[in-house]
Length: 108
Ligand SMILES: [Zn+2]
Image (cartoon, rainbow, N blue to C red; front, side, top):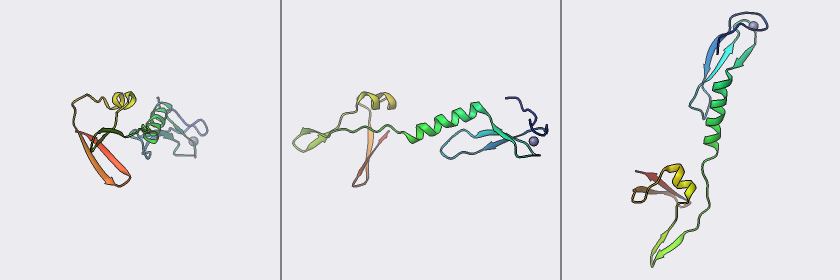
């Protein structure tokens, strides 16, 4: 985007990067040093909206624990989880239990 002049007072707009919480990309805005006018660059703004959306909606799937043998239980990974994590049979994962309500699986 080309830096333009302020439509209100015709001063040259200043490019300013703004850190947005939960987004990797910094927002780029053009601010007028003379009056209150400012605009956000549309392309980076769209990218940031996508980044925030992805963080807000992690994959959450309800699954049933299944019985494998006498004292072992198991769980399937469905197609959505396999595809989003690119899991393959035989791969190792690290299981940790941070509290009595949570099981965390880390891909090694
Ligand atoms: Zn201005």
